[in-house]
Length: 365
Image (tube, rainbow, N blue to C red; front, side, top):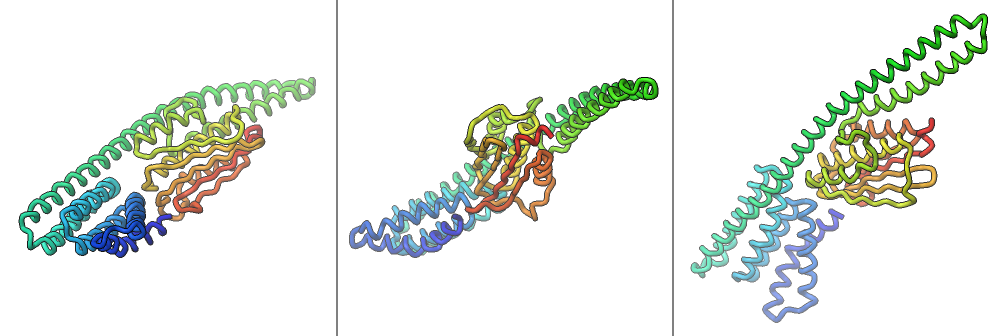
C-alpha cells in the first residue's frame, strides 16, 4: 500500500501543474480529476510516511505555483503543506520536525519571492501567512505528540505499579499453595512409610494422594511462573479476555485505536486459554504502541469448535531487529504450553501480524 502511494506522490509534481495550466483554457474534468485523486493519495502518504509525503506535496505545489503564480494557489500551497507539517511534528522528534518546518518555509519564501517579486503588495502578506500557518501547524503537531508521550508514560507507570502488586499477590499465593501441598505430601509419605509392610492398600492410597497433590501443585506453579515472566501487566487481579475493553481504553489513551472483531460462537473458555489469549493480545498491542508508529491496529478472535485463534495486525513499521525479543518468545511459550503455536512477521499488505492458535483441550493437559 505504501509503495503505491509513493508512486502517486512521485507523479503528483508532474500532474498538478498540468491540471492548473489547463485552467487557462477552462478547467476540463478529465484533466482536473487525476490531480484531485493524486492530492488525496499524497495526503494519505503523509499519514504513513510523513517526511516523504511532505516532500512530494512541497515539490508538487512549488511546481504548481511556478505554473500559476496567484494568491489563491499560494494559500492552497500553505494550507496543504502545513497539514503535512502537523503529521511530521506528531510523528517525528522535535529536531527532525523543526528542520522540516525550516526547509518548507525556505522553499515557500523563495518561491513567493521569485514569482511574486513584481507584486510587492501581496508578497509580505503571503510570507507572513506562510510563517504563521507553519508555526501553528508545528505547534499543534508537537502538542499532540507531547500529549501522547505523556499518556504513554502514565500508562507505563501504572503498568509497573500493577506488576509490583500482582507479583506480591502471586508470592503470597505461592507460599500458601506450596506450604499446604508440601505439608500434605509429607504427611502422606509418612503414613505410607509406616504402613507399607502391614497395610499395602493404605500405602497405595497415600501414594495416590501424593501423586494427585503433586500434579495440582505443579500445574499451579506453571501458571504462576508463567505469569511472573510476563513483560506487561494489566491491573485486573484475574486477567482474561473479559479485560479487553479496559486494555483497548488504555491503549487508546496512548494514541493507538484498537478495533476488536469476534467471529464464531462466543463461550466461556478454560482459564489457562483465557489468560494466555489475553496476555498475547496485551503483549502484541503493547508492541504496536512501542514500535509500529501507527495509530490503529486490529484484534481478531475466532472461536472455533476445538481452538481459539487470536490475531493482531497493524499497518505500521513492525519491530526492529530479527523479532527474537523476549516479548515474542514469551507469547510463543504461552501458546506452546497449551499445545498450540504462534507465528509473527510482516503482514501480506505490510505492517506486522501476530497469530496464535490455542487448542481448547490444551488446558486439560
